[in-house]
Amino acid sequence: MACCLFNYVTLKTLLYQSEKLWNDHFPQCLRAQFQVSGSVLHKQTATMTQRAIEHTVTFRLQHAPKSPEETDFLNAAAKLAEIPGVQDFQIRRQTSPKNSHTFGISMWFATPQEFVDYSEHPAHVEFVQNRWLKEVADFQEADFEPLS
Figure 1 (cartoon, one colour):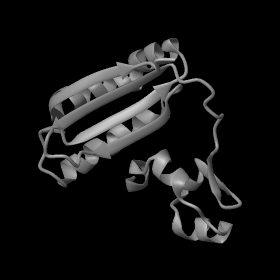
Figure 2 (tube, rainbow, N blue to C red):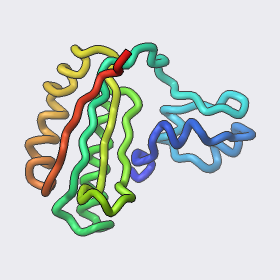
Figure 3 (cartoon, helix red, strand yellow):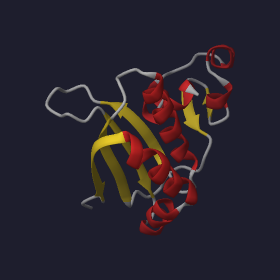
Figure 4 (spheres, helix red, strand yellow):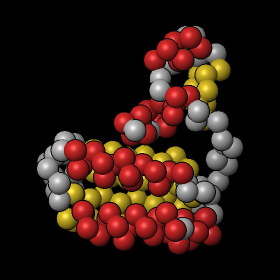
């Protein structure tokens, strides 16, 4: 499951010289979502043509850093990327001591309705009820739309 913690931005910036390198060094779960064309990595889904809403949340877990419980939570959170409408899903670790939150999750939705559908999706509701409310010590959610 650790492969699911890779994010698209990181992956798409990597250049690969051959399909053999790709097949030899990346887990099946990544190869199923991405493909190599020449030296450029492409997501195997429709290109995002519109960005209506960026959903972000920063948070601090109740679990000890780098504990199995932390890893399990992050792997469970990564599955939210599978909900229809979610685009450019990322989980990041905080690097600045200025903020007590240790992780951030962000994703884009092409339409406001896709964001509503995500929020109400059974997998999201279950994650919030069974994991988020029990394991997150503090968080800040912010949702953005482009200025133009």
